[in-house]
Amino acid sequence: MLGINLLVGPPLAFGLTTDLTNDPAQVVRKYLSLDKRGARLLAQSWEVLKPYISWTDEPVWGQVVVITDFTVADDVTQWNILNSLEAVIPVRFRVVGIMQWETATFLKEPRVEAIGVHIKAIENHWRIVGPQFPPHVGRKRLADFVRAALLEETRPDRRARLERLWNALEQAPSP
Image (cartoon, rainbow, N blue to C red; front, side, top):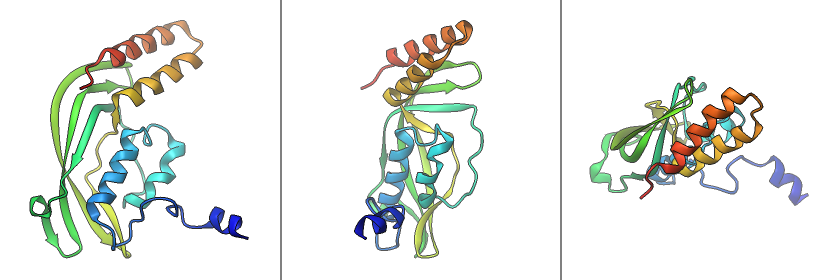
C-alpha cells in the first residue's frame, strides 16, 4: 500500500514544496535550478515546472541564454517587498552567450544579467508570476543536449550545423 501512495502522492513529495512555510527564495532557486539543467528544453518536462509558476503556457523561444551559474538574493533587505504575500527577488546570471534555435548558432556575449523574479502567494503556495524569460541553461547541459541531437540527426547539412554548434558550446569559457 505504501508504494501506491508514493506513486499517486503529490508531485513534490520528494523535493521542495512551494507551500507558504518555505522560503520564497528557495522556490525561485529550485525553478532556476531546473531551468539550468534544461527542464524547459523539452515539452515532456513541463510538468516538473508547473508547481513553481503561475502561467499555463510557455512561449516558443527562439533562443536559449547559456549560463555558467546564477545567484538568488537570500537577504530580504535586497528584495522589493510589495506586500506580505508578494515580492520581487533579485537574481543574477553569469551569461556566456546566446544560442539561436533557428540558425543553430552560438554567439558569445559574456555578461552578468540581472532579473527581478516576481513571486506571489497563490492558493497557499509560492508561485513565480513573472517575468517570463527565455530558458537559461547551463553550458555543459546545453552542449550535451546538442550532442544528443547530433547523434540522432541523419541529414548531413543539419549534422554539420549541429557539430559547429556543439564545438562552439564546448569551447565557450566556463569559469
